[in-house]
Image (cartoon, rainbow over all chains, first blue to last red; front, side):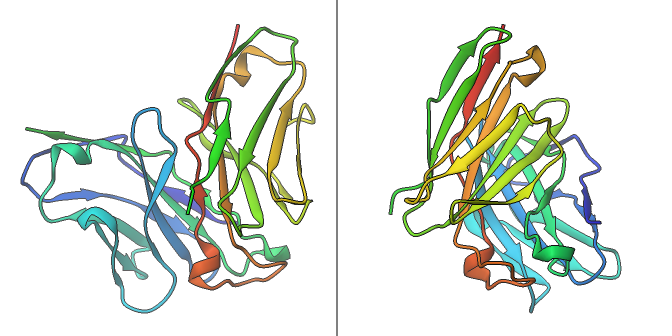
Length: 117
Length: 121
């Protein structure tokens, strides 16, 4: 079975500072990993994904994420936070070897990022 | 290319009523998935349709059902509404393959609609 954990309900950071939103996962094999962002009263927007290749993945709006297989983590990062980055962030994992070929990802509970001016 | 659209955006119903939500995927996408989002439970998978067939189903009661039409548009129905059904219902579309264990990066990504916020009184 696949699972994902976002250990922080909320992350606070000052504008201009680097930010990190944490995600750890559990799958039986090599995972497919995703980050989504949700702004108030909106659906989820895709940020980036890791399927294979370089451990550092670059995505939309200056975000990047680092895949660490030994620590089973996929933390979302940005070098310099903006107030407009304040939103709810979801990590998702899919096990490409799930039985029956199911490709439905499992989402974390979400982390609220608050960037202070 | 237009994104995923969902109608209606907001809905108020009373207990015992039934409701139908609609989702139009991105043109060319054949897979539509439905999720329920609540503050307490987070994002939970309801079901997924591909080429008019339900391919995956989450752990929800039979009051929750869905279907997909030949143009890939999908509807979700909830019968005998309960207060706990109040939630944001999200629809996501993707290209997706059929019964494959691995997918290309193009097929893998799900794109979400804005959601339908349902309030049950």
